[in-house]
Length: 286
Length: 336
Image 1 (tube, helix red, strand yellow):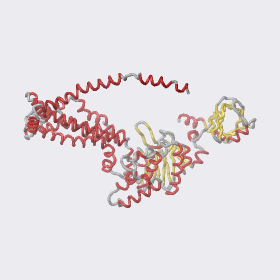
Image 2: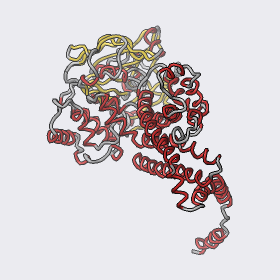
Image 3: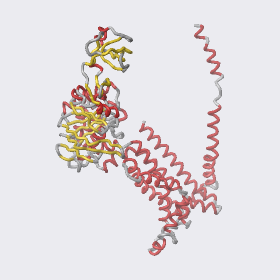
Image 4: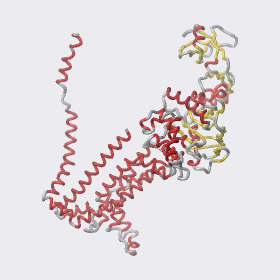
């Protein structure tokens, strides 16, 4: 008995002198400090500045006609860009993951192009193509059509900048799932329509939703490309991010932060949706 | 339905998966395509199903060329190696899929679909799993569901790709006996791919041995095992001793060697290196006294006990049966 009991005090002694886990504490501390400095404090500052002069000023800044038209234009651009890129993303991902064809790697590279090109350049491309001095400029002017410095230009730029999101999200997922389920479905008599709606899309629904959420967040928040093609015509070609910049340059901080808080809210909603989707996805795949 | 494979060739880039393959399968037959990995057996199965288009040659079902037919119209039941069950559908919906995607005019009514699906689930003895999802099932259960799903469209032909490949040894044995009984019951022309010779010999009516995109031999399990047509078939189907002799090689199965304690006419002396007892069988690893060549001999346990040999003893060997292949043929087998 004595021999068995003797190690016990020793164990207790080491338990009492258990070393403080400095390394994890330091790492977590550093991460938190970093996050606070670059994320939490600015986020807090946005809402603080927006509401500093009271709720009335805040609501007035948002209900002001130019702000309201910027919100509507942002929503319009997103409403067009997101469905377009949803359809394009699904089609491209389906083609790339489930079929073999020449030029596949070229297509993948092209899909990534908007990620690798500076947004300002993407905007400039449209100015060079559709601007007055651009390739199609004279023809457009003849037919009294405006693309650059008008709503169509903003929509085009938004579509371009956001088009990789859905496709990029779906391609690796579909590739990982392989083609066997589709082959099985075809052997059971399914046509292309059945394949898409009953086999392929249900298998990637969470990835698809995730891609759409990211695509939407970017469509509403895009600044660079839209800024180049917009021309900043107040109440007409200003999106919400552009409107914020103008207000800020005019030292109208309360209004600028009020509008900025809307975009910050959008970001927060996006994050919540994203983590909801991720947890559902994880639950289904387990 | 009969299947006729006529001069089919298929390449993937520079790799020749099938080279001028011809094969006739009779109605109601259960045929095994047996070969090592990369031999082209799965490609042949996929060509028959219509999942791959052959570069040359034709596939005929009951004498009709299938070339113009879409995969959907071939009425082929196909079971994938990894089952390929629809992961987001219940077991019931998986089996019902083939009926639900039929054109409206050919689609059975909802009660009829339910009746048929439940009948199939009973046939594979898994009707109690109808509401589960594929990931909640074991490998053997998934395999049987995949089979039920393939049978739901009342196919004319059943094709199975390595149907037991992903299962553990015990489930595998049970399932292949069950498949054999099922086949006897429903009498559907069936082709399955396997790399496991025991599986092919036990289950199939006829075995097609495939190597390097070519058919080496077609025959009943007894024919291919007892009378291998080529050195490759000899080496692939079971163990074999290859003994160098003048102008070629002799192929002798380990269990077709007579072991005696003393010399007899035509026997060779060999030293016992190891005696390994595997249940009722004893495997002797011996080396020839004259050339030092290593050979394998198998004999029943009681025969071994009566011989009274052990490691280090000299025994005398005489092949009861052997087959001689001239140099050129055995050279080919070596390349293989």
